[in-house]
Length: 277
Image (tube, rainbow, N blue to C red; front, side, top):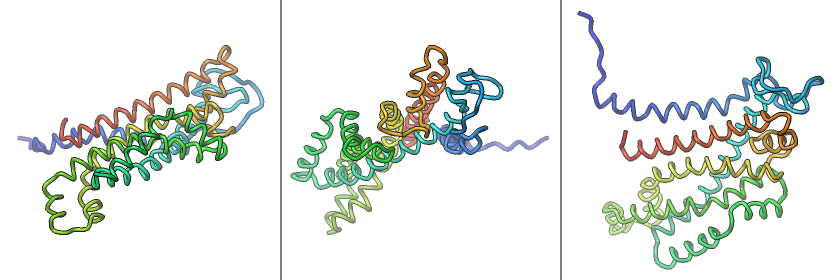
């Protein structure tokens, strides 16, 4: 008889839980590395035909100055992901400490921080970002820092709620009763307890940040030509929609795919951290 190796049921269950997250993570890595394997330089122009549709030599077609749209889309996805990561990083850098302080200290500090963040939340996000970019200058870094500031309330709310729940746990109360300093309790007990919620919220915010970057770049406040992002690609296609729809449709499909990818990743990550299949 031939021996057949059978994984224990528990191990098979763990592999099935992690497989979806690993696959989605691998897709994100491939998207980040894809421009390295682009068939043409993204900004390389060519004399000759322009506004041609997809073909074997140009999978997404070529734009109005002979640039390969597939290579520019790959470069645009990478730029958009990098920009979204910067925005989420800024939001985490501000929102997490404020949320932990508010949820742990409570009382006057909680009320003051919550009111300040509430004022920021009442302002229209993109309009506030446009105002910040208009005051600091047009650049991708300034645009994404502005978007990160806009995202602070959504990070703060999740962190504060998680910090309130974690701060009421028995082991935190025990550490407080033993005289541990507040900063040690927040960094050693509260912060590790809120990390799962922060990871899920950060992943969801990445999807929104991609759309926000595209919106700012579309109106000329983000990535500046000739550099490519998903927003600039769609903006550049505006004058040619009647003759070359592929210039807008294919980058738009790529943007939808990236947003759905992060949404699915966040959903799977949340279920994984909750111990569900």
